[in-house]
Every structure is written in C-alpha cells, then in structure tokens.
Amino acid sequence: MPRTCARCGDSINLLRDGAQYCSARCRVAAKRDRDRKAKLPAAMTSARQWVRRDKKKRPVRADNGRWASVTNPESWCTYEEAKKSKRGAGLGFVLTADDDISCIDLDHCIHDGQLDPRAQKLIEGTPNKLFVEISQSGEGVHIWHTGGPGRGSRRRENGLLVERYSQGRYIAVTGKLLEV
Image (cartoon, rainbow, N blue to C red; front, side, top):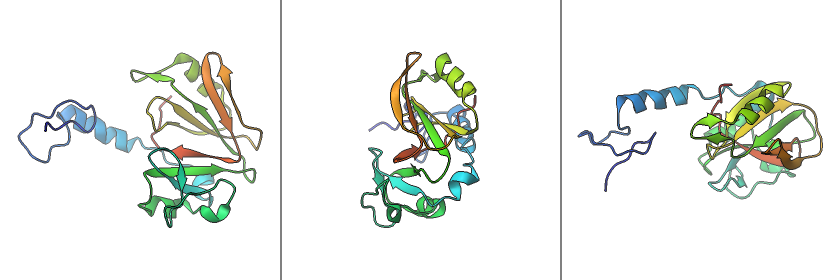
C-alpha cells in the first residue's frame, strides 16, 4: 500500500520507512502549521466550559467519554483537563449566558486554500475579536469574540451561511489560527 504525505496527501517516494511527508517543503510547512496554532485567550482557557468532541463533532465528557450536555455544567471540565484527556478526537467550548464569549461560524468560505473576500470583510468588521480559527473541516472559519449573550441565528448574509451563537451551544475548537 503506498504511503501518503501527512500534509498534502501526495505519494511518499522516499526510502526512509518513517517518512511522514513527501518533501522537505511539506515537512517545513507542516511545522509552520503547528507553530501557527492559536494561543487561546485566557477568557476561554480559564473558564470551566470545555468538553471533548468525537469525530462527528458531538460533545463528549473528558472524564468518561459519555455524551456531554451544553446545559449541564457537571459534564464540562477545565481547559487543562480537556487537553489532557484522550477521550474523543478534539476539544470543544460550551457557550453560556454567564459570560460574554460568542462565536460566528462561517461554513464553506475557504476554497482551494483561499478565504472568500466576503468572509474576510465579515471578519474585519467583527468588533472585539478574541481570535479567528479555521474550522475542523478546513473549509470554514470560527470568529471568536466578546459580545454578550443573545439569541443564536443561522442565515445567509451576503451569500454566506453565517451562524451566530453565544449560549446554549458548543463549538469544536481547532486552535488553527487563520491569519487575516
């Protein structure tokens, strides 16, 4: 079975058995990608509102791997506990009315590695940004910001599918910083 590059998916034609990348360029780019991971803001990392998530982005508890609930704080944990847990496939943050952290979720706004100009405009126009990350699919963006609790919405804005949430939801967190 042919080996494939962990970054670009091309075939690896190197003789070394442990090679993960097809070229030095992919190896260096993968290191840059890792180094670009977002430093999550203290407003989020200090909150006990973390869960793990499974591959289908469903929230799971860090302690036992059972389903987590966005309405039951007993199923949440600290950032450090979530990060150390091996349950699930990644991290998630629960949005509550008790803080002012909000998230704008833009789906399908990255095409062939390029950010849609309409998404760029929305990002630039969002006040009080904490950070902007590439979503789990690699085709979307999460704009984390402060803005107080409000009613969630999902609608088309300027041709983009825009979801806005500040409570009663959880968002999968990748930490993969989008440089805007």
